[in-house]
Structure formats: structure tokens, C-alpha cells
Image 1: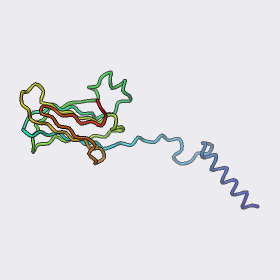
Image 2: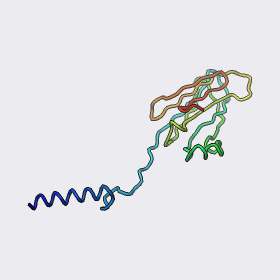
Image 3: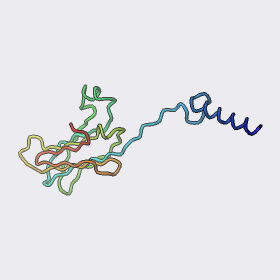
Image 4: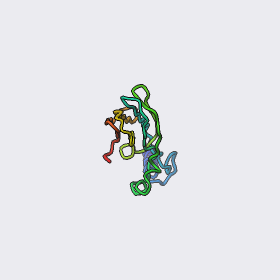
Length: 141
């Protein structure tokens, strides 16, 4: 009988722990969000000066993003070419929603033939190309 009662106590303790009645290691702590490694790559077939916008921060929601998208989409100007790739690694919680890189030659009449590559956790998920600009994103903008 002592063994059955001990088993019942263990079962009751496990049930209480499951519903939060007994503190256990890790209970009550919020899980940290998983950060995904996002790699943006931009290059062109002809050497050129590129205006590059990219997403390096997850907004809380679309309303926050739409209020001021440039807060979440910094830009750089970089010299790129076939042997001169611009590469940036960032960490995002939700790359399906927010990962994005775009490059363009602006008002230049040149057509350098831009290419972009977007990889998440080492896997290429999108590529883009265009004569005066390119966009890589998982989400349709």
C-alpha cells in the first residue's frame, strides 16, 4: 500500500506542477524568441553605386511599421559589382514577415543589372534581379 500511495503523491505533484501549483525550474519564464540569421547580398553585373535598403529590426506589428517604415529600413550607399558584393547579416524573429533587401541605381541612366540574394538560417529563400534595381523578400510587398 505504501508504494501505491507514493505513486499517487507523485501523480498529484506532477498534475499540480503542470497547472502551476508547484514551482519548478523554468515554469513562469517566458520563452525567448528564436532569432533567425538573415543574410542579405547585393551585387551588380557592372560596377556601380547602389542605394540599398534593408530590414534589420522586427517591428512589433504592421501598424508600428507603417507609422514610420524608415525606422525599420535603414539604407546604405555602396559600391557594388560582379566581384564586389555587399553582404550584411542581421537577426530577425520573424523573417517571413520582415526580411527584405532592395537595391537600385536611383536616377542614374546606367543599367548595372542588379542581383540580390536573401538567405535565412543559411538557406536561400529568395533572389531578385533587374536592370536598375532588385528586391528580395519572402513577403510580397
